[in-house]
Image (cartoon, rainbow, N blue to C red; front, side):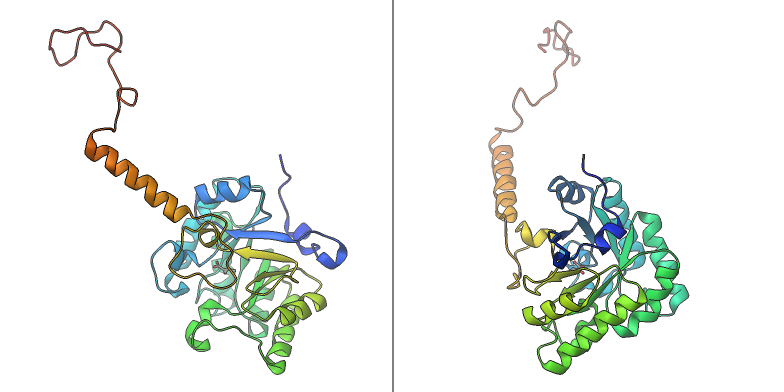
Length: 285
Ligand code: KIV
């Protein structure tokens, strides 16, 4: 049995100190949490990507703290050894520190061991307040999906020198505010490498190249359950949507042709008992 991974253990996992890269994956319910944990991942992110990946929304802006708590609860009831991080949804940390702390606490009470929120230096105050309430915080900068409208779409960030330096400043401000790790999403590899080099806490990349201290992918992307869009940074390790569609198709064909269920898949009355429907015949088991 693996030992549960703790926040202090994650905080020190810099590859520059000789550690192997951290592995994070999203999970939104108990079965996917069991898959992630069975595979030995370090961190499970109950991401607000649940909105578009599972709940059918166009973007992540529609999910609420109650939605996130519902999914965090499902993941935590699987009792994974991996550290559970609950994503704070849009507007749950933008309306004052007291509101943000209360919302983070809701996710902790649902089973999260840490929370993640998007944004750089302008979120420093709120990060500090949540950390002050003894709730560990993971930062998330670069392409921040909750800012889709402000960014004018899902665009790679930090492409010029000024924007790259701004990302380094954002990351440092988050570290000073107390984050234990920072997700870097959608930034050029050299920029991610620079942020990783200067930060004393691990960076976890998604579309940020190989230099980060860890990597994160959305579970449904890597399993090929989500195939509507495949960003360049996704590597598909399975084609479960095609397999699942074929399996359900085979079931439908068996039902329609009478091949399902078989005798062996049916319950029978025991041994010599008479047929309960009174046909007078002894029913076979
Ligand atoms: O919600 C999510 O899945 C995320 C990852 C992309 C980092 O925030």
